[in-house]
Image (cartoon, helix red, strand yellow):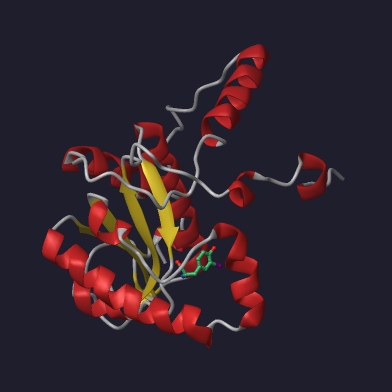
Length: 224
Ligand code: IYR
């Protein structure tokens, strides 16, 4: 095994404590304005903006730095139409009963159904794939570690980056979403993780009240 090669840390930034508090508060105010959106505008978004957000996602920490993710970015209207058709077919079965009564009841306050027009309206769909095998460099075929954790973190980075850039997002999970492998030309060794929808909100966009109610700090934390 090779000895680990290290570099000095040169890009860490320290802030005065007041500044830290202000930054922490400002980020909270910023991120609490992010809402999962289902009413998208068809207004185009330049590809370069999406690319920068994807670069940000690609800096996420991952198991052994294997970066076990692939982002298939769909902007072609014909491919978006195909994704909509396939997703809606799965969703019709899901909402038609496959989900089970408890799940459908949990979803009721969101007002979602099998109709997914946003899959065609939004300018970009980002299909995120989790790679079971890969490695730190392209073309490797090693086992990947903590794949779901890593891809989940990268997805979080991407959602934050898109929001920060001024774009709305939806984490969409048609169930099952195996059709994405075929549509995006991805190998069976990759598992579709989430379909991220992004673009501008429609002028008359609404969000479910249910989704705006977040648990207070006391309920989600314990300090030991
Ligand atoms: N995939 C379906 C159902 C759905 C499931 C959960 I959990 C949600 O938080 C929202 C929707 C759909 O996208 O409609």
